[in-house]
Length: 250
Image (cartoon, one colour):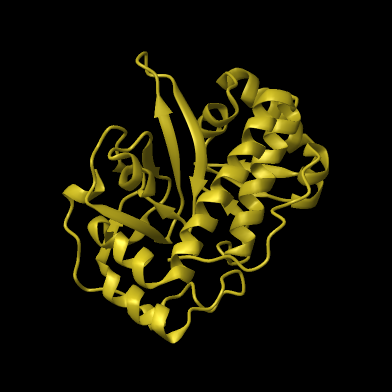
């Protein structure tokens, strides 16, 4: 679990946070920025494939993703995995453990991940003194619910081809908003990740993704997928996009 690793006191100053200049995020007021800078304890670096949080664990910390890709998931006793959602820069993780007392899902890094670390027991100070930041946390939780609604619709009603097109289009749109691609539209997921997200067998997933590849919409590479036509993937899935402008982060 990430909290068992050393949290480095050296940290990126909040006023120099690389996420703040992105047009995707709302601006902090001076008072909010000062509070978040005090709230932040340090930073944590996690390798690809490492577990950040474990289902059933009690964590003393909350985390904001500063860089990298990851995913939330649950496991059945026989080892079957359901990926619930994907995490990217600006996402808050560990809030569920703060409210419920323990984590109800696990979180794993898809790529090397950098995390801003916050002490859970200071969260009430945020609610008591900074109503705007408290609303931001509510907004983040509501947004997560809306995303999970769309994922559930995909698993329940979309065809296999539509499911795969939606998932890749969703990850592509999020990555594009966060300026993660640097000219190369590469998503660090495997076909097994896709299968575990969509509730399909790996064989069915492979056949479905091959159809999208044959249409020239994506290209599979070692441990990742390059998106060639995000708009057509959205059209196939019937998904209209993220539908959000400025969003908060802590």
